[in-house]
Image (cartoon, rainbow, N blue to C red; front, side, top):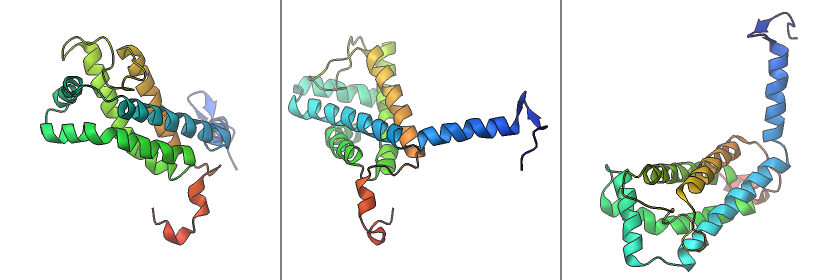
Length: 186
């Protein structure tokens, strides 16, 4: 089946296939995708609760919109303001879908650009390009106040988790599999 004599950068092709197979089994296993799905869902639900339960003052919210408007210069200000108004609700609904196992790959694929916007905003604020901010102004609302360094690390980890969930083929404890396939066209 495989030629043991073929060598690619010091490793035989069979060794490379075994390593890739082990990684694929870990990603597609039962418990790791479930744990990643739950962690990402709980993080987004917590962020949504922090933003919805402790609404920021109008000036502080306008400051966050200014930060995102400074980051996304090509977008109209009203679109950025609408994004910031809808964001907690999107986080809550998609986070709940992840926890329940409803369309986890689709939810994670939607979270990837959202997390990329978080990374961009925190990187700009960390660099000090839009003034001096000592903490992330709207990461978890007033529920948890994070430094930019910690917020940036959490955002990068959330991006990695979302990508792993999108790449996973695991069907362990997913509620969307209980629906008849004829109703699920996605």
